[in-house]
Length: 101
Image (cartoon, rainbow, N blue to C red):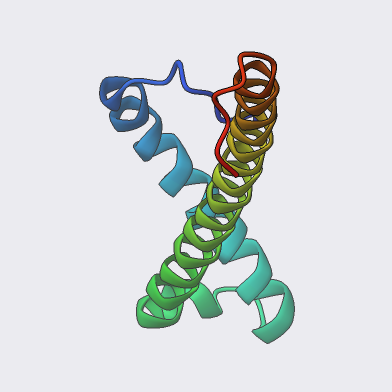
């Protein structure tokens, strides 16, 4: 899978969804049959459905975690920039003799 970017639209994600489910479906059948015997996934669709749900939940959690980490990094960068601006403003005010600290 590629990197998620800000350029994806809701339509892009909607069109990708069936491919994602197909991927999870095929992987689920392979995993279940490899661990529990050939044909087990077909005989137990509820297990396959649970597998797909677990995969989508895991993926969603990973994406949300990455998004929160990216947001935290962006907030930290803004904080650093603001602190720098406050310092510059303080220097300017001190030079003009107007700084009250």
